[in-house]
Amino acid sequence: MKKKEYYIPSKFNKMLYCNKGLIVVNTLYGTNSKFVKKEDIEKVEQWLAFVEKITNNENDILFSYLKEKEFIVKSDTNEDAKVEMLKMDAVNNKRLSITVMPTEKCNFRCKYCYESFENGRMTKNIQDAIISYIRKNIMKYNSVDLSWYGGEPLLEKDIIEYISENVKSICKAAKRPLTTSITTNAYYLDLETYKMLQRYNLVNVQVTIDGIKETHDKQRVLANGRGTYDVILNNLLNIKNNTKSATQRIIIRTNVTSEIYKIMDKYIDKYDALFGDDPRFTFLIRPVGDWGGTAVKEISDKLMNKDSFALIYEKLIENNKKLDLSFMNEYFQPGGSVCYAARRHFYLIRSNGDVNKCSCILDSDINQIGKLKDDGSMQIDNSKLAKWVGMPDLKKCTNCNFIGSCLSANCPMRKIEGSIPHVCGYEKQYLDETIMLMDHCGYFEIYNENRE
Image (cartoon, rainbow, N blue to C red; front, side, top):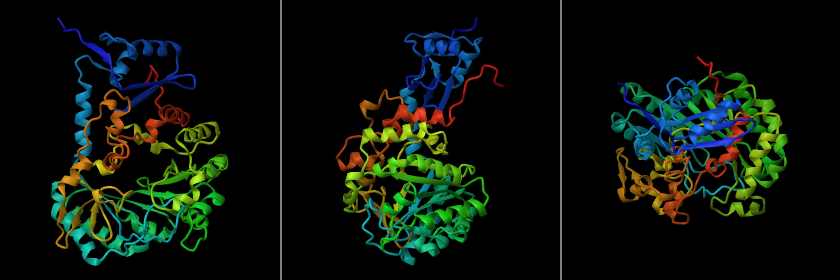
């Protein structure tokens, strides 16, 4: 006689009634669904609200679907242990991630920038030391991710090309996959430069455009005070119209102030018209914050507060146009909101050879975990490193239905600095609004009992 199986709802389900349906998401398993038929919704409500064990009902198509999505799990499943395992995998994965700052100088003087621009071009010795480090250590890893950051990294294109060419050869010889990415203001991202970056397995480009021309040119200006919008937009349109690749993604980040919020409809209409037909372009919306430095004080009266930022998501939902916001899908995957600085094998190498973990508090002593030596070795202070990657579990997170994504490691900087014991990411802070926006964009699977 077959032993009876019993099931219980996953404790990490998030349910939200939205747009004539019931949405269920689960970040521990990276699953989501929307139920629209009344009879389906009633059954899902009943099963996912159960406090007792549910007898397996393998003859019910919907019940089997909920098992497949792991909205309901076997009654002996230890989901807290799964969270622990997921966290260990996310923090200690065998991918070597190195972000390089070829210079910390910048041609921009953005109104909210926190950087000091004191360190200049990376020396040839440090460039060779990076290459040597990767060559010596590559067999310890399954893959390599090489990212470029600044300052403005494209001020030193030759360094990018030199290091990338060598690392590509190392990875090819070691039979290890290489991916590259860049965060750039895009002022120097002309077509030739983009094609150069493509040669090195480019997957992500992040560019900031703050609204439309009239708002962008107030926030993101050259060192001489002139606007930058026209050059950036022309560069992106040249890339769109003259390159083809299904592997690259161009993330257009917009840092929203109260002034930009006022023109959000124009913003949505404009970028839907310009990039809505190209799936390589996706958008990331963030509020301008006080990220340090003195520049932001000039626009302190224009910063969005925590509560008002939710209005931006509402504006995106109300507009009939749909920007590609698929980048948000990553935040609902297991480990999708874990900060890069919390990962054991992530290193930020500054132009002077300092090894950091966080790109936000560059000059903080606790952030400088080591030094890259000329022979390609890293002199690491393990006591400092442990503070970044050894975050303890927080009791308040134990039953949070977003913990599968952030794993209590969304922003280790806040904990280390001691200013805030823990901070949730925007997607958690505005979880309902984010789910409604994703539903508006059609990112949730709609349940159909006749699916194949």
